[in-house]
Image 1: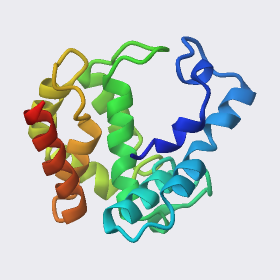
Image 2: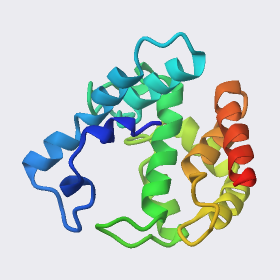
Image 3: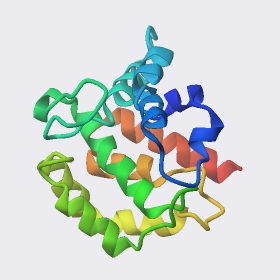
Image 4: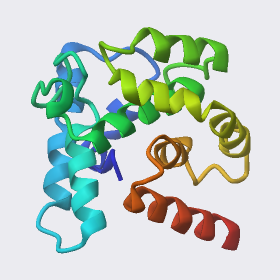
Amino acid sequence: MHDIGKLALPDSILQKAGPLNAEEWAVVKRHPLVGARILSGSDSDIIQLAEIVALTHHEKWDGSGYPRGLKGEDIPLVGRIVAICDVFDALTVRRPYKPAFPLKKAYSILRESSGSHFDPAVVQAFFAAEAEILRTHCSYGDDSPNRPLTPAIIAASIAHPSSPHLLAVHAQSVDDASSS
């Protein structure tokens, strides 16, 4: 649900094979606000958490992210966790505009972004679970029939296992994937 705001984006942008121009990029940068608005007002704890994630998953540790330019611990922890997971997923899965990167290259990019894009503690937690992330990536990557369960969701539950909300999402996704 972190990218639910992309529902408001035209397919011409979402499926574009080449780089986005400045106008298209401005449209894309609105999706966290749209997503948070879609999810706002719920009494459900999980939907309230999803609202926070939708709003903050593109913020960066150094304050250069969007939509609000939050910095450091002003970014909710769940947003910081999903940020690294979202980037990992984007790097390691084919997109209309790029092939999947090899894991070694993706890992290098994540490590190099510690302290700028990502919270260093979240990067450390991510790599502490590297074996599980690799297993999940192999099980749910581009060519897996199990792809509906994205590595970003699994990695988030691994990176912060004490969060019952993320574990609940993971457990429900596993149940859904195994019953289909």
